[in-house]
Length: 96
Image (cartoon, rainbow, N blue to C red; front, side):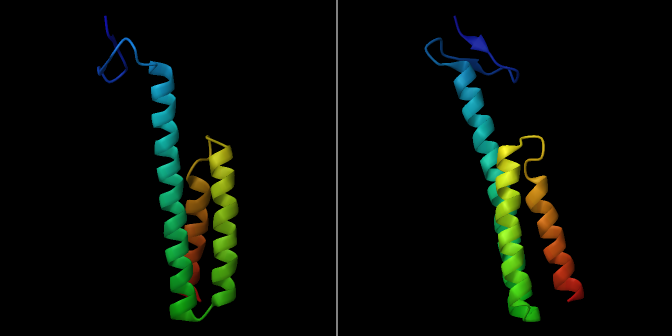
């Protein structure tokens, strides 16, 4: 007999439901944090290319990497840490 998860999807009895859900959750977290990091890097390149603030751009990339690591280690923070750096880079792009 198959079991159902929270969404009503049935799992085959041979599948490890807990491992499947944990892997899916980890993948979603990875994609969210990775997308936020890419947004930071694009904004950092824009700050460097448009405003010629390459030092600010380098600091933004380093901060985004640190924020991504913090977000990956702390599930409660998640992608909010790199998004905070993205907001700072966006402000730098606007007001630099």
